[in-house]
Length: 419
Image (tube, rainbow, N blue to C red; front, side, top):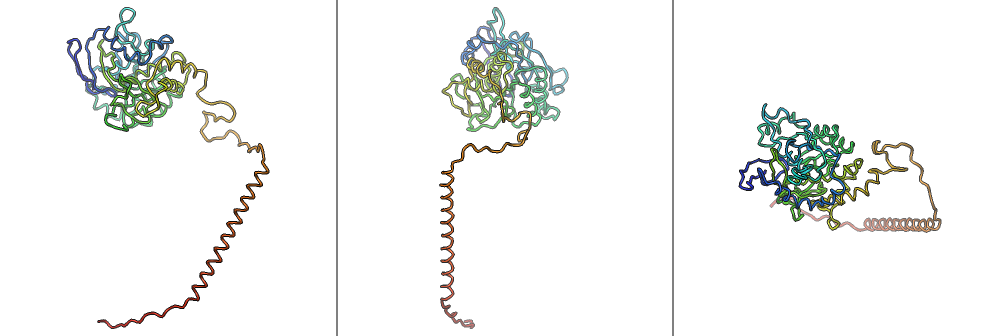
């Protein structure tokens, strides 16, 4: 849920629960310079000033699978392509989508600001990137929210949205959404995206408060997806952030400012926001190294955290650093994602299949002395075992003869009279 709080004595508005967002604060019309100043901690945490010397994400498309994006927001205008609405029919006719959560996430990824030199408003992690908006969820204040969540027609909207985004050129897919169980269609769609070189990044979930091991959330916990946890400004795991072994990396997720529809600005917290920030870093890597595979991008992200950090289920390999991720990617770009050379399994073939008969084992060196020593030890062991068994048999036979020669005492008398 986003809790409203008026800023600069302006009226507040209320938005109920949105997947991936926990309580935060709303500003209807915060001053633009205050907006950029409010982002300073996040920008410094991700080391974006240095990263932007290398790239700002130009030429990359990030698909935001969410509640929809407002393409007219002054900090996003010109950067958003509105794609298919897979929720069509869930709302009554004539009801326009709210598009709050999706706009918020898109601004954290690719917001470019506005005004002179674009120094006002929200700046995203990859301000040069483009956004493909794919609507796959409703926000709970929309009238069709309940029917959307219970209608079987919409069960596979996320899977269809992933395939749609891949087929329309997405390089990165941001999934600031989660649910308790995945479907086969979603697993297949994720496999399809990865096979096309598309990076998928999803929220680890917000059910971690008071729990040592929080439940797994999907699609974040599906293999191949980069699962993102949230940290506080002090870079500690946020109390709400899920803690489980699917968590790969972390990013700021508390008091994160972003854009809302109608030129609004919002502050909130959640693994949704952390996920959007990491999607922006992935976009920077893709812009610099467009052919880099999802596996190597994941390695660059995990390697970007401080060397002092060790893996834990709360924050994964640590808080992502955009500049270090780019420098690590520079080294990884010289390598392939799969092994090559003689004896390597062809990744296009089913594991376990053989292209040719196995070659016989070649004996490189025969140590005759070792063979004689070990052979003698083995023979000695067999002789000792045989002798022991023979002695045991003799002792058993002797004991049986002694039992046969022992006299049996007569049975005691008893009367049959009852008293």
